[in-house]
Length: 295
Image 1 (cartoon, rainbow, N blue to C red):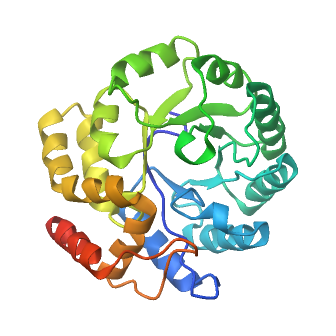
Image 2 (image 1 turned 120 degrees about the vertical axis):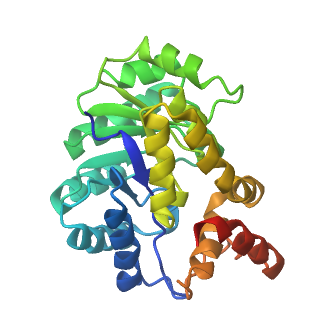
């Protein structure tokens, strides 16, 4: 079984108003995730705010996490950066720090061509020497991976998975089938977008890269295991309980909502990085109501 299967939980990177890491709170988040029994931890993904952190801050966060997790749950580390040189450095550092896998998005200011993305991934995958997951996140990167490019990247050493956005037409099974036809047999096709996780897993998606599992790992894992077992009724039941949170994720963006969830769960004192603003009091009240099934 590949590293990129099951449930991958993506925690926040808790920092104070001066953007200093709160190592104790990060370790608390991680301990809860490990105790739940998830399949991997997605450190410094979009939920972890990697794009708002300097390379040094990211390295410090990884070392804090690696010390806490201590090999109990595989660490997949986001190494996306504006330049290939920085991404290469982060990939090498992740391997030295004890990460088991890498997650790479084609972060850019200038629009990238397919060839530029290929060369970028080629360099980072070679430098990291770890299993690497392609992060297709057009909502932030403005770059969309074609099946042809995914197929080409899957031929590179160490590129073993893709994290897909939810298909606009909802045809998870069709998309999985099309990608499986052009990638190696052991290439893992997983999905982000929490509100589509149930359907993606039931359609044969290999992994749920989950935002909400960063703070609510147990119910997220229950949904994952039900879907993996083909128990559509149980997966639907759990997904229905999550529906108010999914609605908030779609309305405000999961990043903002996760900070409100953290506050509602008693993990106060952390705020999103400016210019991102916390949700207002009325919206925070909606978050508290949405959390009731899980408290």
